Image (tube, rainbow, N blue to C red; front, side, top):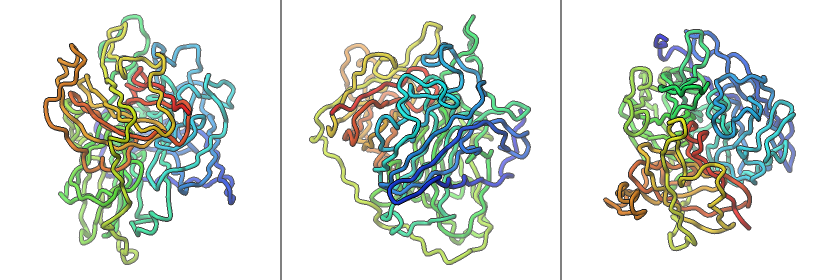
Length: 511
């Protein structure tokens, strides 16, 4: 379809969800998933999407660090899926309902029964449930520091479809410590969910029914990755945001299925990094660009002081697939526009503090175990790309079984040509380093022969994280302590097409 005009729709800010009950001991929410129509661009017909509480993205859930929160996630979606299902994908065979959901709060420190295990899905009215379904109401203890999390669907075999249809929203953890820092707050604290989509001429969502090389006799087929030709922020195509000449805090989330974003401001000015995925960094860092893989988040402060009348575009130049795919074009090379047009509503007393949060570097000597885990690409029986973790499928026996309280170093050995954002549930980790190695030699001899020095983490990776970019021809090392809960969790690539097609593995934390 024709290119849509840029910067003609204002950026929507998702509403804050009000709880059904809030008392001294716990807070209770109900969140319903439904299908509805929403305007994603004024030149498009309204688009049928899925969302939480009648909103895409879903409303923002704000909680306090340490608050006891209970959420009943309610599936009220129609019986027919909005998008083409591939019944050859494991977990999406015809013996399960087409429309099923399970919600994962990404980055939550949570008991496994409330984590959104991929086989704990449920249908409308909980009429049918998956084999690992345990409870209708999830319990979140929010044992996190103040941080930017998000909630999204996590159903085995159709996560890519459910998230693409609209099932995603922000989950923000607040704290007294964070408030005391006097960061930009209130309407000057803005979440930005960046995604890519493709539309049919009638405004409906396009998702491919077949890969570029169709498989004879197979009706619908998984694609190796999906890259939309249009960028959206908070559910609007190429929006603008009117801002005052003051400091703003932006929470950037890459919510795309497979697309990476390398973000810059065309004004050339710096963004001040203040937080990684799992909380504030030790001190802010001024950066000119930020690379975000799917599911990665950062928080930045952008200072619009003395820029009255300026229009500033947030640009993207990350190839798709990353790092060696197609370059961006006119549509995918710009994300949104900031217009410094609003008068100053009050004196800006917010600050970019010199010091934010203590950050203790983990000591490798504390690790009781190192795991060497490969990221593999192979072919399935139909000749389609098949991505695997440690050369194992979802149903292979569990091989990662850390003990509660133990500390481990994981060596992510990428043998594939793509970068993969690897996400571990339950835990937060530190990125130790990346290092080039001889892939051919490893393939033949299973020996890591490093070809260069260790590369330290990038600026936005020098904080607690839950998702890490594992680049091709490199070993990426991460370190984490397992806890505070035991039980069954998962780790996976967060390119949703990869995750759905076998690049996900269970792990179990043992007592």
